[in-house]
Length: 206
Image (tube, rainbow, N blue to C red; front, side, top):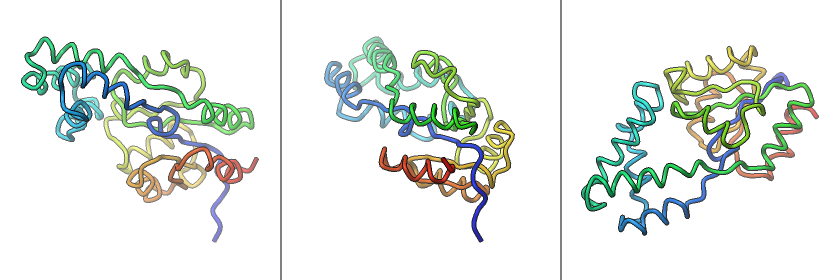
């Protein structure tokens, strides 16, 4: 049985609409004598990351905990704080081709929401990147209190979009998020790059 055509689009942020240049973190690591990849490795440790993604701690507290963990390898707490602050000043880059797609979709009368596991600086990031007015809905895990791929997250996203799950098309670059969305009743597509835009346009019927 064919699915209903989607009337709302839900997009992941990091890896879809926002890109990160790995050279930035690598440059900070070289400057401070840190091992390659250590900033991301420490920051993304699940025990450290999960509380900030669900709003239990602030982005500032998370950053401080990363700096504390880096104190020894960086040569002291002051150098560690400086390294992490320098790394955090970079807030990524907008994928302009995806943004053009978002604008097309909205112009066609289809609602577009951002679905992201993010911290409490998301609104500031969106403003800095010029995206504050480019989306109909922003569903931030730290505001919802639960993160992808939990069904409660996708339920909250559909409520925010005022659209039934069966009528929402979700796009993410991670398999686990796509599987979670499908389990919650949404259509979902694993993002593989700009070559997917033709398929997404067809799926949305324009």
